[in-house]
Image (cartoon, rainbow, N blue to C red; front, side):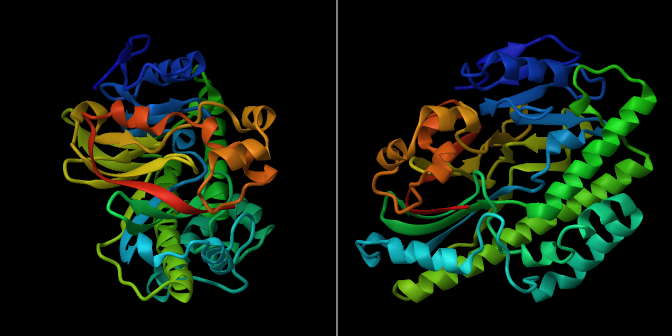
Length: 399
């Protein structure tokens, strides 16, 4: 299937790869399309749903401008997956010890490592980049230093909470995969919030009228634009390093509890909340993927379902109408608050049957029924990606 709905209410059209999109998300997409610097069209993926300012599951190409809120506060959030030489027969019948070993190696929720966890090869780049950003923005530095000034270094290789997870999965051949989902942790959040606030201030000084203050932007050629690009690049790099370090820790946990194994392929490590400079429809633009992954022809990507559903390793088809993008997951169909009102821990237990994971009320907001049907999402983007492997989790670690 291809484009299923097109909105023509702004300066450019919005192409949507699903019929399953609510009215508020439609309004939000229309607001984005009215901005004067959006290039050619806006693309909305099959997992599209309401977000802050910009819609989650949207791909927004902008000419000489970037909207910080469209990137969001979990800058560089994304996925990592790798196939191991283990098979289903190598796993014990009871996987509780495997989950416990992972949780003992990888801090989850608000927890962090007791000491700095910066990988040696990246230490100079990570340290120097952050110091440059903080020194140019004392207000950001003050906001961050009031917390744990070394927190960013101790959060490398940590999971966080919300929809972030670590999973041990089986593909249809019985091969064991490791898959994880996280981003730039507390420092990325601080950077995102700071620059979103600065963009709003800039908007007030311009006295510009836009449909949503969260669509405030920085113009190319300004100091704030350059500083934001530097900061967001740093946070995206940090997020990728975080996932790489977390994988090392997860593999250590598995090697302590499972037979000897090796990795069969290079890990796939892809962002789904980020901005990048690319060329589309005859122009060099800044492409913001808010809840979407890059799917150029041949690109490998990861599209996870909910904690009780299938996930997919995919190869991009390079569809130009989607700006060479695809969905980043199942996408929420109800808010966390709605999920907690509607379901309880017994529902969670039933919907995660066969998965070794938390089944308490603290993660009911992540119940599979709170998400869209991942198989329908995949059916709606057959022109964007092809499936390489289908995974089903047997262990899921949540924050």
